[in-house]
Amino acid sequence: MELVSAHQMQINFFDTCDRERAARLLQAMDEINEQMGRGTLRYGAEGLKQGWQTRAEQRSPRWTTQWHELPIVKA
Image (cartoon, rainbow, N blue to C red; front, top):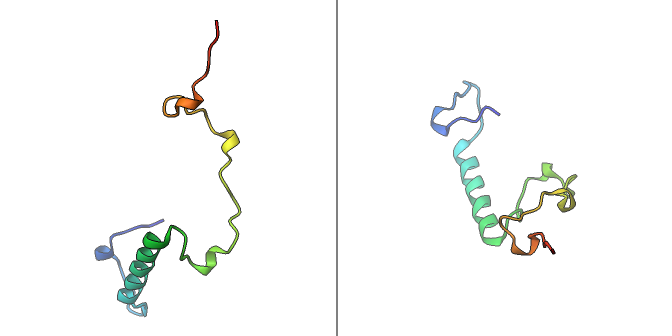
């Protein structure tokens, strides 16, 4: 992933990317998504349909956090 701090980024002599503009754009997208809900704005490269979804039927029981999922024992 090569994630690095913005202050330690190595740039190329021929780099033409306007990093300040890109940072303002990302900040604006974050603010809109925070106000309007996650995923309101996203990149077009992500596509419209997500190829995966979580499968609740395959998750482990949550006995320690959900009272209604506690097993009932009858003697």
